[in-house]
Image (cartoon, rainbow, N blue to C red; front, side, top):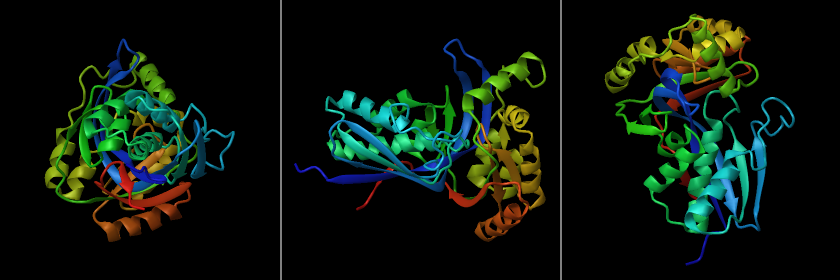
Length: 312
């Protein structure tokens, strides 16, 4: 069977509408209870036949070479590692030319690197004809990172374990958000380390009892938007604010601009602000942009599907 000359796949950014973080585990991870929501901001990965692996980058992060938000283009990149992992799993040579077109900002708490890895798995499966089923892809994704399985799955899901154990969640409507990216990226390990430090000093709850996700899940099932806005929660918000105090102003700017609720997404520094509907989101984005505290403001909606091949 003839293989395609090139395959392009895309995968979405995510928002954590709920993120409860337990104590540090012996394996170096934290136990999580999180509600993922995939939103309409996408990275794409195009793969072509090649001799060995090579990786190029365009879009968000491509101009940041050597800077704190730089995206690597070697075997440190999850896309490269995804290619090697799938090739090893399928017993094929890891031969491909890879190109990432980024729209999801790096180190922004939106799982851009995980989205890239998920898109690469899907695209390379098609290019190499490995015929991996969804369970195979999810298992490989879990080896790459805690958020990668959700980037494959998309939609809405409850994540447990370190976030890789997923239970799909029903959401009866589309939810409209404004993403305000405030300043340079934040390192996820640094934010978790700051959480551990704050807990050791007794300045935040110790996490031994995980904050329940039921209020967010109920709001996603039944609405209204104001109920979801009230239920938003993130244990990483306090350490993110500690490392980046300007985020307090960014959160205040979102609520002052009319958001029904706002929180730091994941490890930050993105502020996810909830709006009633699409027109309200457009108005909210304009107001947030006018505050002058955000580097980038994006209007998105979700849930959307996970990693998928884009028709040529």
